[in-house]
Length: 220
Image (tube, rainbow, N blue to C red; front, top):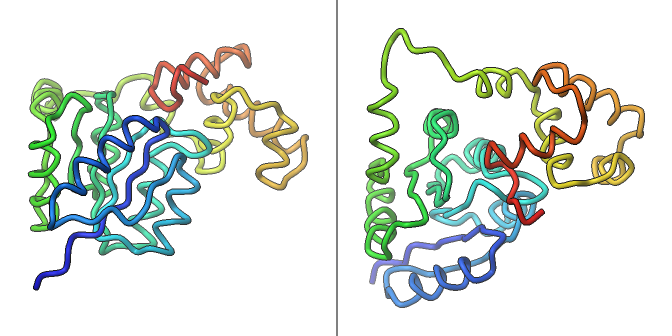
């Protein structure tokens, strides 16, 4: 008998996660082996469980899905990744596809679409929602330049992206320093660099930008 596909789910919305788990568990060929509510927990569980596939959101606390996907691809190259998000920003699509995700679906996808995407991913095929495909087709041009926000965000180092994420969640400087085990002055330095690279003149605008970019859920 063929072993079921082992799936790890990551979404900070409980109702979404539980609904998806219920849908997948109804399929005898799938087995949900774990659930995570944030990017850091996702990475920890992925390393322990080594799932066949991860289905994850982009906007998650502590670490967003883009950065988490990069780490999982590096640590677990055999694990497939499906993005299930409400955001269709072009620079996310490009960055995640370059990272090597197996699919990018929007949350208006049907259960059948998700099941089919998992099966396709396990065959090493890439699956995109029709809306995602249209975004790529509409913006495909050899002379087209990256959006201003995307270009600025791409200038951030991995650590700066991590700090930007936490600032976007409304964390204080001290909280971020404690979470990352560094000094407050180091975080202040990172924040200044982030503001300069993103051309932001007020710290509060970093929160608005993180929400605008879809890195942070507005609920934060």
